[in-house]
Amino acid sequence: MNINRCNLIKTAITLALGLGLATSAVAGPKGDIAKGKKLYSQNCVFCHQADAIGKPGVAPSLTNPELLSMASDKFMKGTIRDGRAGTGMPPFGHLGRSGIDAIMAYLRSHAKGPNISAEIDKQPDARGDARLGKQWFDNICATCHGFNGDGYLAGGTGTAIGNASFLSKASDGFIRETIKRGRSNTRMIGYSGPEAMAALSDQEIDDVITYMRTLAK
Figure (cartoon, rainbow, N blue to C red):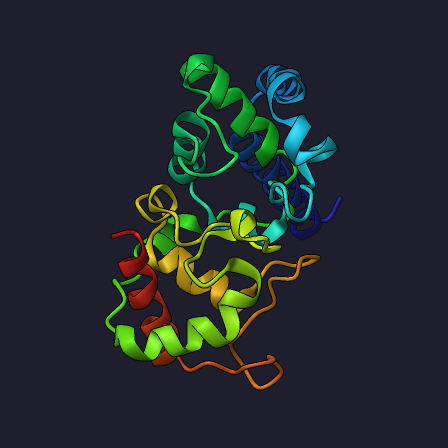
């Protein structure tokens, strides 16, 4: 066999094994995924539905590709553990670290792209004008999330992004990228770029985030 061809085959095999290991590391061992699926079915399926696809007005999708790409394990595990006070999301700390880790492994097994949450969470904090941010929030965000960011409790189809327990866990980078990119197959569209319904500038998005931070107070 040609030496160059042999080297190419070896390289391809190495890359394939590396990708397999990377996927396993993201999703977790198969045993953890199976355990997580069982725990999910026992505790989460009632609101988030089968395969964690969510239900509008009740609970968000936990297998949304943008969410799984941008949300850190710390953010998601903390939400499972502590719940969201003032919403329909109760705490599940009683499942213990191993149980929450297993649910996380199950959710990660649905990921369709790389986890870029570490890069996103390193983004700088928003520096904006809350007064201008309120105008954008009231005209755009409140339609689904409510004027106080109460979400479902206000009769909206969006989540409670003004909730203190959400804002205490979500980085400005996570909120910023969610506003920019949106969430596919949901009513949360992206608001950045010429094709967006409202092409917000980076500064205007930071204004919105700055205003959102005041809602937690």
